Length: 112
Image (cartoon, rainbow, N blue to C red; front, top):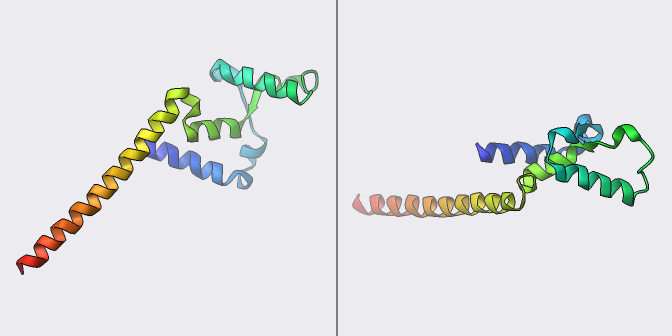
């Protein structure tokens, strides 16, 4: 399931300019961890937008969420390590599966 999640967010990230809601969409920070509101406040302050666009003061771009979900940053510091663990597990499973396939084929070829 996690691989599907990573794949879907990767496709969305890769096609940012193909989907209008990814470029222009906003999500309320009330649905997200507090760190998103803090990040938004820092960004608005750095850009001098604190007093401009008050309707955007609690809404982040959709792409922030997509990128954080894709990289695991949404889940905090352990999220990235979990994604790394999943990736390493896939590498190990792939390599060991190829090794076993070649070993079985070699053994079966030798019996004939």
